[in-house]
Every structure is written in structure tokens, then in C-alpha cells.
Length: 327
Image (cartoon, rainbow, N blue to C red; front, side, top):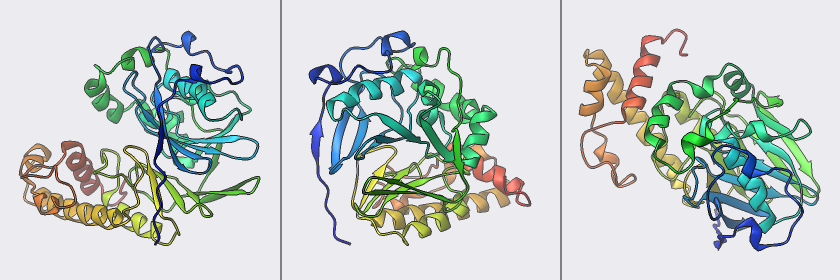
């Protein structure tokens, strides 16, 4: 595939440009007491941006911004209502068009806990599984507890969780949906379980861009709610699409599509080596310390010796213990 990445990076606060009055007053939300911009915007293609956190306040995931002829579609809503509202406010730096659609790539708190700021006339779209998890408070389960402790020191994180009410998508899909916004075609696709049970990717066929959430990242994704054995096949389905650029849920856009193969190989070996440790009677903690994936260090330089992420190993143990249901 031909690869092109436009890397015009805009680090702009909303107050630096003139624009319409924001529909969201960030000062009314817990965690909104921060200085400077919350986001930086990277131009990926005409009308397509990635928003990444500046570090001035915890935002969790990236967002993708798709500016259409009459409206805007956002992919993911961040870690808190304050972070979601900050993005709406700072969008004035790049567009005066209204946000009409939000897509949740999956249910995790850092991608979906901003949903509650959106009024009913904004269409929040997710997989059926994502709605189920947000409806049953799955986004404040063990993964949330794990990262809440890790992220407690990040600016505005704990404050941003005050008054939180996990809010599900108001529109769902089971496999695919296509939006036609002016001349732009936006495909929402579910290829199978992976990072969670309901990962959606957003495909822009004309622009040859794929927005992947946490299904495919520049590095090794978190796997505490994943389905590693299914994930390999789900990634294989991505290869059937035409795209040159990946806009991930964490990290910068990339055009090295060999990263799909790298993650498939890592997942395969992690599953097999964890399965072996499970069969030998090791505890998940013991297996996590002993499993060696350093043969993947050319693709993932942080793998310098024995050791696998404990949440990933615990999740695989859980799946192996319940193979009949694989839940």
C-alpha cells in the first residue's frame, strides 16, 4: 500500500480562535480546573484529525475527529465528562461545525466515560456489547479499579470521576453500519472479539484511514478484558480493508501495517505460553513472572526478559478455566 501521513501538529487552546459559543461549560464539571489546552490536534488528512492529551489534565484515550460537510463525528469520548467537554470546547480551534455523532470503539472507561455530557439529539454509537457493559456498570469494574490506582496522580483524574454516571450508546450495531455525511462515507465495523467483546473500527475508505480504538496500537495493548485467541482472527479481518494509515486509541497515527502481524504473533505466543504454564499448575502470578516473550523484542523493545503483564495472564487463566463458555 502507498503510505502518506500528514503531520501538521496544532497545539491550540480553544480561546486562541474565534468560534461559536460552546454548548458545554467545562467550568461546571469536576476536574475542569486546569490551565492550558487539554488536547493537541494532529492533521491526518483533509478534515480528519487525531486529538491527543497534552498532560494538562487526564483525558485517557485519544479521539479521532471527522469533520464532514455539515457536522462532526468524534470517535471516543475520553476518561471523564470534563475531558469530553474540553474537547468540544477546543474543537473551535479547527471547526465551527456541530458535533452530531460520537462512536465508542469499546466500553473501557478511558474511551467512554465522557458519554454523559452529550444531549439526546447527539447520536452515540457503539456495539451491542458496549451498550450492555456501560448499562451494567462494566466500565467501573476490575479494569477501572486497576487503572484508577495507577492514574490517581494524573492531573484532574480523581476529580473528574466525581459525579460520574456511565452512560451507554443510544444507537447500537451488531456487525456494521455505514454513515453518509455529504460526500464522506464512514463505515463502522465489528469483526469479532479482541481487546473486548465489542470492538468497533471506523473505516474511511476514500481517505484510506482506519481508526482502531485499542484493537490495534503502536505498542502492546492492555488485555485484561480481552479474548487473545479470537483477537488474532479479528486482526486478520482488518487486512481485508483498504487503508494506509491507522489512527489508534493510544499513541500517534502510523502507516507501518506490519504492526498487525507483530501483534498477531505476540498474541499467539502469549496465549500458547500462558496455556502451558496453566497446564503445569503455575499460579497466574508465577506465570506472569516466568513467561518469556523477549523473542518479540524487535517489534516491542520493552520486552527485555522474562515477564508478561499480570492482567493479561489472569485474563487468559480465566478464559482457560471457562473454555466451554469462553466468557
